[in-house]
Length: 550
Figure 1 (cartoon, one colour):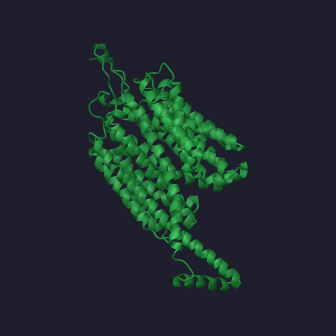
Figure 2 (cartoon, helix red, strand yellow):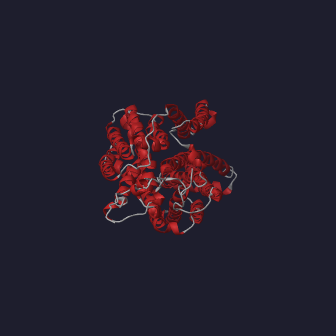
Figure 3 (cartoon, helix red, strand yellow):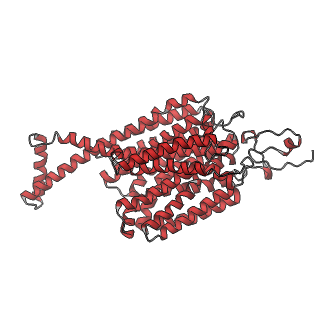
């Protein structure tokens, strides 16, 4: 009666069980939340704020540099092709480290690894801002990416275990807000900082925020009992992972510039990636202590979930990439104005995920995901019907619909995908989930950029066929433009030349609108096309059930 109970971490056996001589594998799904000082979940919201802040910093830095590229080129004396490495190097380092995060977390200890990764990210951010040469900046961007890679999957795993099973949706909703809003904030925040200060401050801003996140992680995050430090380092697995993921990401980042497989360089990258990936899978399935445990994909919940995550990343990042281009190229918006247009949709997504975190567990995840995908398709269909003259008001409701759709997707997809994993496999599961989502996003951007360019050329050629000297409407339009220019004092010859240029620009703009329309529809259809994957799931439960043996 007077015995005291020490707090037990998720995944650890209680002292009473151990004393009884009947130890068993206890996962977080077995642990009930307790009140008072012994409650292992008492700091859950502080942990959620800390790791989500770190994740947002990592995601913002993926896109924030894009608006500063012209300024960097002038300061560092770099060409457009060279300055692209500032973005490419960060993303490659990022995707290499994400699937290794679970192993690294176990090797160093979660608190030490997460805090150390934030420290590396902060330090590299400072030196990125202080860089005076291009390749110095690229070097520090690589280190920044290596530090930032841990801030996604390790943060998500930490949130899974920091909340009791029946509240995991709340933790994932908080994380999901960062994942969805981060890519939107990047260009907006970057545009404001570059206009108000200078491009180094897009990196310096990480320092105080990163220090706050690191201090909170060190104070509140604790190592978990179920993580066992590896006795050996799988060097060959790390090398193969680096080659497979690095070559693939490099190919996706640079493929459009080199005309894809017309280039021997891009073809070589593809071959290296495929061969390394095959060898990596073979190696990791045969080694005792793998860097990536592919065996977690035997789960009927996780395997379809990570593939769907790739489609979600493709649709999300593809549409996030296309919309700013549409607003800036055709409507002349600045990066800051573009962000303000997109912001209401991001807020709608955040609110929806908050509701899903609280109430989503009452519904079948498959129904919520299907509803979200259909809403996303509806939003893309609405965007595809916008004319060139469309304004901010015309974009408002389609973007709200897209935000709600994405909000319905993330929390149910994450919760149901991880629902039957034992607690000691969550790190590998979230690492795989985030890797596929990130690679899907890179693939989406590469595909959309390529299709946008090709569709624009195709539609312009088709429209040009109807614009000629024998077309009455064309000649009438050309005459009106010429007369208007002459009325402003332009001579007849120059006025006609300028009128022809203006007409060509108008045809190009209409071709671009048609190309964007096609891209929007493709994004929506691809996400809906992934819905049959959910039929593989055993159930749509978002919280853990009875412990399964894996």
